[in-house]
Length: 243
Length: 173
Ligand code: SF4
Ligand code: FES
Ligand code: FES
Image 1 (tube, rainbow over the protein chains, first blue to last red):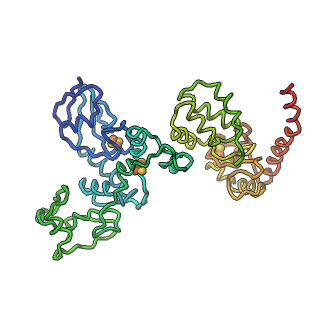
Image 2 (tube, rainbow over the protein chains, first blue to last red):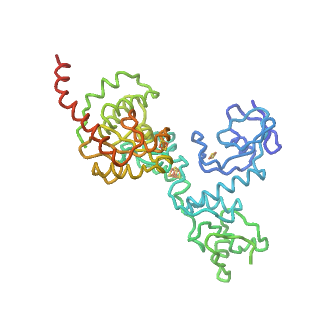
Image 3 (cartoon, rainbow over the protein chains, first blue to last red):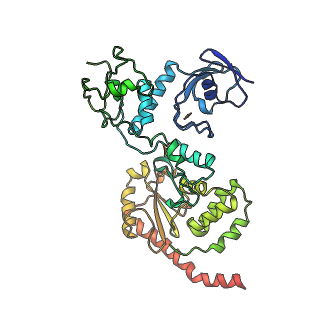
């Protein structure tokens, strides 16, 4: 049973556990886009990266594909990790500004600007749908085709597949299929919409924001409150705390 | 799309064990035999090897050497890499396309030639170059040389046609 240290906490896990699972076992949240407990790790999104050292060198590695080993020292939220993650999320926002999951992640991680041109893709190639179809639905009706820029999720020969039972699992797991809210800044690349509205419960902390499901008070009093002025922001650049 | 001669597949599949690792060698053989990967054949391979069709399709669309539409008898790869580009490859390509009456890289309707563009085939000193059938490299091309190059293969393409009935009768005898 390997014993490793995550953020200074020693933890003993079963052999074959990944670092991501070990961290989650300790209750440390690591953001992921391409990981699902029921699927074989894929390592596509790199959002789960952590700083790892088992000797002299400290490296960034994708924790979902990293087996827990004896003596591993893991930092899940070091400055270096956070910086790398923010950059990734920034790029994901630029690729798919319409995804709720990505926008939420950006807000929660403090991404306040997007320096890349918005691409408005419909897929981030996380492979969740392909793996769900194959590993959970036992169908294998969809797969990747092409490569490089032309890589996309498709059915063989682009024809209706006999294997597809139209279960909809692929839509369910897709991090992009759920659209973001169409709130005050529906057109902007980076949403951060909720951050620009003073909510009932969090009025005085200008940089803090709760990322829970919206509470009842927020719903009736926050975004839709008549006396709150929603400040229009410049298109792609939003910074909170500015007057 | 032409009728697929399925009978050619079975002996070909016989040569390989029904294992996943044989997928690419089989696809290569099929590509050589048919000059493309017919849909029916891919389905057959998928069933025989017990590899999902999505995976077969994924591999078939990944590699440039596989094609899902029929390719010509001769595949002409015109290099558009940096060195070749600088030394006039786009003009050579234009000329070739014009001679073959093609709108862009692709296959002629008589299935004699397929024109493809590639990025550097590793002999920049000979730029601009074109490679035919993955074997014959033609160096220092100019617009004027394109006609001759095509003709060489055009003739070759027609010559075996006369010889073919002979071959066939030999095989039968
Ligand atoms: S369609 Fe959705 S689930 Fe499938 S690879 Fe693309 S982003 Fe991932
Ligand atoms: S969750 Fe680890 S790379 Fe996507
Ligand atoms: S650029 Fe054409 S061979 Fe290198």
